[in-house]
Image 1 (cartoon, one colour):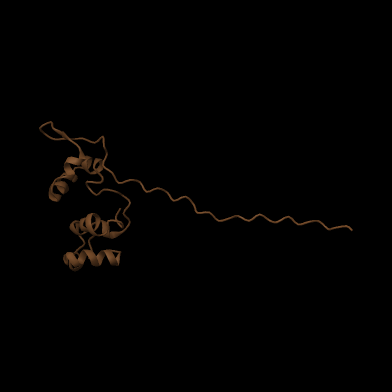
Image 2 (cartoon, one colour; image 1 turned 120 degrees about the horizontal axis):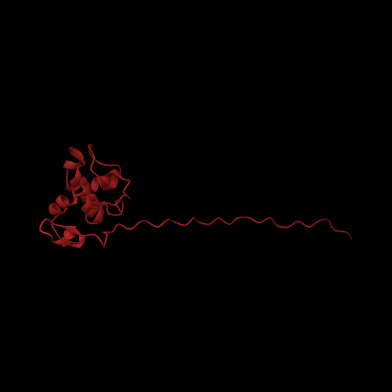
Length: 130
């Protein structure tokens, strides 16, 4: 008895998940040193233990802002408008906006300023902003 050609099973691709790119870490540069006018040099960790108003003031210095990314909240992974100051009221994430505005009505009634963004970044919407 003659048999016809046998058919080989056609290989199928098993879907696999693409590797998830690792998020860049938001860290202060361990090599960074800020040199004060008196010649004293200090690391970012020193700044991070100061009051927020002092940190904001020092982070206006571009070297400090770039060297102390975590301390200065300078990590460019934030796509949400909740994580940066805006000229408008509120932000693009309803849940975060409500949480911040419940604490600070100004953010939704007048302007989403740097204080609103800092509340979001450091206390309320940490996952969204990191």
